[in-house]
Amino acid sequence: MKLFDVYPLYDVNPEKAKDVFIYDNYGNKYIDLYGGHAVISIGHSHPEYVKNISRQLNKIGFYSNSVKNSLQEQLADLIVKYSGCEDYSLFMCNSGAEANENALKLASIHTGKSRIIAFRNSFHGRSNAAIAATDFKKFHSKLENRLDVTFINLNDSKTLKNEIKKGDVCAVLLESIQGYGGLDEPDKDFVLLINSLCKKYNSCLIADEVQSGFGRTGKFFAFQEYEIKPHFICMAKGMGNGFPVGGLLINSTIKSEHGMLGTTFGGNHLACVASLTVLNVIEKEDLQQNAREIGNYFIENAKQIPEIINIKGKGLMLGIEFNYEVKEIRKKLIYDKKIFTGSSGNKNLLRILPPLTIKKKHIDIFFESLKEVI
Ligand SMILES: Cc1ncc(COP(=O)(O)O)c(C=O)c1O
Image (cartoon, rainbow, N blue to C red; front, side):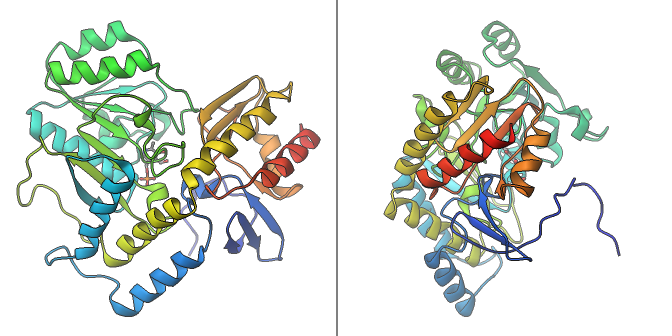
């Protein structure tokens, strides 16, 4: 049977990986500046991660959410400890799309409304409401187009005010740093305005931290750059370092009811241990600080390259923009220089999303290689 052909694939077949390196089936060694799409946070096959997941698998890997799982409670406590987000409760699921989908649903139940405000160039996932709030029409079908979503340009305060004051908005869905869209960020005043308008007009603010969360930008969550308090904080990618896990933090103003949300696999024992290990390693190895330091080092180096017209992002969620498409550069980097990088909805932007353990020497190799291929 053939695979359903939806991904344009590079002809590289990774067989093993360690920290920031990937090894293919021919034994070639690659530097991973893509992190499998911002997923690898504490490095590939981190010894603590391998040990803890193996040990848990030997105890119990899965049981349903119909019985108590104290690992979920431990994880909730540790997220509060490391993020400082008090006054929230945790619901665990399996992916970023599912986290956003659940947050949108709860926002609608909580407010009794159904219109969503999302932003131009947003990406929120492939499930029904999440894709409806994603501003890339090429991913849409008629199904999700039935949902009521208004797209607004980042920093367009006037339109935001006009739309929210109509009173029918259940949620404003925001990436503090856009991922797939190309690393654009809203201005601080605009973020504060969203926060205050949501309060005033009884709409929920959803922080989509699926890509930017768990230390990637140097803060635990990217929205913590600002003094705001979202109703929902959605997480996935870096949360499990490759183990499929997602979750949402739900503010205490949102009341729960049995049956409101549910999932078979979400929050299973292995997922919890993966995420607990990620949090402990981020703390023990000071990876948020490393993200800030290496991010700044990357930016300083990027400034020396005249072909780079724009440097975007924070910490280790970065993009470098050229005034031409980066497709050929990415090809040369992966095949000739053995370096993985990422693309985005902006075809001129190269995305850099490495494991948070990356060091200056790897960044040096990247820039030497980049100079040779551009
Ligand atoms: C900001 C953001 N939200 C949501 C998603 C969807 O996450 P998933 O692919 O885990 O469903 C992504 C994935 O790239 C993302 O970058």
